[in-house]
Length: 289
Ligand code: AMP
Image (cartoon, rainbow, N blue to C red):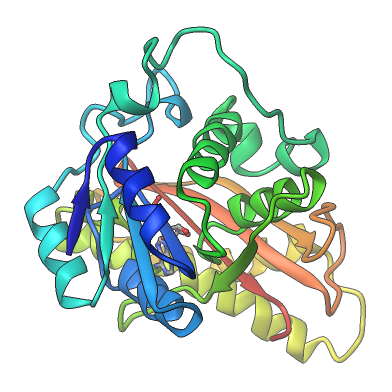
């Protein structure tokens, strides 16, 4: 496996391969990332993974400095998964003038950023677009695989590729989950008590609960807010004592346009974020597969 740290390393590698599938990550790889790599292998002989904790997508009070960095384990996982090359740039390689210097940026349209994580994390998606566009220019992949776990990010990247006519295809990959439904995430390791871990599973149970209500509604209109409240009133007593559980948002959007919806429709995508024991978790589910 090739380990590429500089732009020159990356460009030399790129000039030697024909068809390339790209999986951008922030490292601390888990089975969700590995499922993206498997998907990438179906698309191209050569798979390149990037590992870069991108400072520009973290807010001032977020976990950039404590974000888990596990380079040796990540490289071993990539090698075992049959990855051909890993791009592991230093911050100054991607941001030679420093990450907080003024620089060219892409602003994603507000119709895609004004709600959910875009509203909760000002500047987050600008930072995501900044680094992903730069990585696309550098890596020049034929396809790039992104997880549906980060539904708003996926919608924004798809829109960026379309609007800017970038010459690659975006492949969405389904969310990998733990046995109890919790969406795999690098931040799950902060759920460091069995009680917090137990409470975290209620995020997905809320989504499946709302979906079940919709299925039972047999075409009668179902208000999004009421559906969430009804399900949560049933589940809330299962939050173990001493664990804080605060919803940041509970929404439904149209899965194509990302417009918020008041009532559920067959095209709804449920989107939620919660702080469980102080850990921010996000998840989503289509009302109909
Ligand atoms: P991250 O390292 O968290 O920035 O994620 C890198 C890529 O992995 C993104 O495209 C994520 O959407 C995707 N990803 C993260 N968690 C999961 C998961 N549980 N299942 C599938 N893809 C995931």
